[in-house]
Length: 143
Image (cartoon, rainbow, N blue to C red; front, side):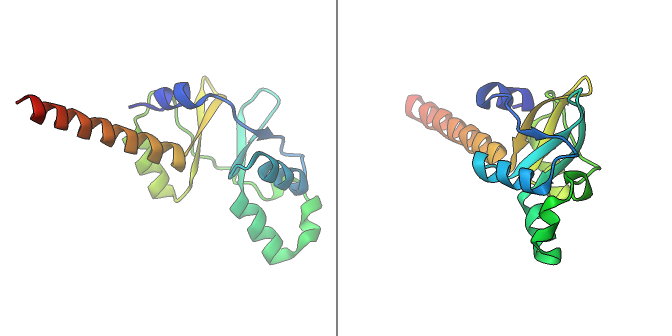
C-alpha cells in the first residue's frame, strides 16, 4: 500500500499556516481542528516547517504564555522530513519511527499535497492485516 492510496481514501486536506502567524493562532487552529500538527507553508504551498502540539506545549511550559505572541517560525521544525505518494506504508513507518515524529507531509513537485499521521498508518496497517486474515479464513474454509 502506498501513501497515495491512503490519501485517496482519507483526503488531501491539510491545515497550513504561514511562518509569520503567531503561536496563539497555531494553538487555536490545532485546538479548533482537533489535529496534532500544522504544516507551515509559503504562498506557493512549499513546506517551510511544521509545528505540533508538542512544540506549543514545550515552549509555553519552558518560557510561559508570553511566547504565544511569537511567530510560528521561531518554534517550528524547519528541517521537515517529507514523503511522496509513491512511498510505501512500510517506508513511512520506518521514517516516522527513526525520526520519532507522528506527522509526515506529502509533497509532489515541491508542493504540499497531503499529510499522513501515525494514526493513518496504523489504521491502514490494521485494515490490511484484517483483509489478510479474512482471506486466509476463506481459503481454509474452501480447502
